[in-house]
Every structure is written in structure tokens, then in C-alpha cells.
Image 1 (cartoon, rainbow, N blue to C red):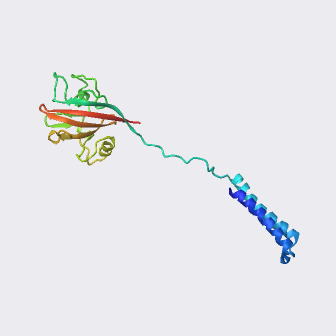
Image 2 (cartoon, rainbow, N blue to C red):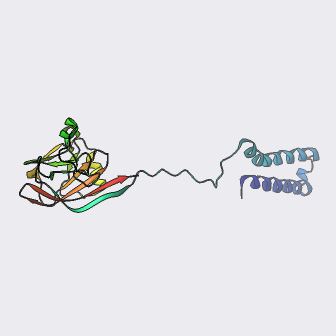
Image 3 (cartoon, helix red, strand yellow):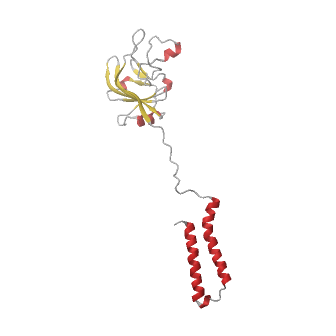
Length: 219
């Protein structure tokens, strides 16, 4: 029952009770009908105020749903591959084998292409994200610091990489090849602002890293 209904019922009951007192209790016989009328009017005015004030001032609709928190961006897999050979290092005129663009899954171009405007080893990929050299791997440019090696105890996945890649103390632009063994996991922030996870399946002469990878896109 609402407050307005309770107020009206209370006013009616008090009115009836006061009438019985005046009629049956001698001490209340001295009350004048005019006093009783005033008393009743005041009670009903209080009851009606419970109904009229919300209409005049307005009140929130109790049935209205509360605003819901907006969900953040969630990742979906853009591309993935179970096995990809990164390496050995290559130079023109040999076929390019030392780069990967994790936004396309193809061999990408290196920094020298942007510096000279010439691509002597054209590939279907765009700007590369990871390059392998004789003793290290590195990002497109060292200044990008877009690489993080996950610890063995860390769970690998989008959330782990997203957290690691915002940690300025962990991000690097170059990593020594001796730090990679079978089972190593590398988080990469691509030049197109996507997050990728590279897993090392094997290390062989060349040097060659056999990797698998997954790249996520957020919406």
C-alpha cells in the first residue's frame, strides 16, 4: 500500500474513532462539532497532501530500470596460425623470410623501405611487427618498444598481453635470441594497435623460430 492510501485510511479511522469518543465518553461531550470538523479537515488535508505533493513536485518512477554500466571493448580473434617459420635472416635478392606483419599474417616490410621508398622484396603484408636477426629479434623500430616476453608462470592470452603491454617497465624493442626456447611466449603490440601473442614452437639453426600466433581485434 502506498503512502497516500495509508494517509487516507488513517484519516478515516481517526475520524470514526473521534466520533465514538464524543458520543460515548462523557468527558469528550464538551467538544463542539465545529472543533471536530476542524480536526477532521486537518486530518484529511494531511492525507491528501501525500497524494497531491508527488503529483505537483514529481517523483521517480520506481519501475524505471537503473542505468547499466557500459561494457568495455571485448577482443575477438582477427587471425591465427598454428605454424609459421620466422627466419632465417634474409637480404636482397633472396626471398624475404625474416619478418612478419601480425596485422595481416604475411611477411611485411622493414624500416629501410620507409626510409628509401623502395621495396626490393615486396610482400603481401604491411609494416612488419617482428624481425629476426642473427642474435636477436626486434620490433619495426627500437623506439616502438612493443614487445614483452611473458614469464613461464604467467597465463598466456589476450588479458595477460594487454596488461603486460601497458607496463612501461616490461616493454622493449629488442630481445636476445638466447632468451627464446620452446614454449616461450611473446606479446606484441602491432603498429595498427592490435594485440598479438606469439608462441615459440621450436628453435633451430638459421636461426629460425617456428612460431604460432594469434592476433586479436577489439570492438
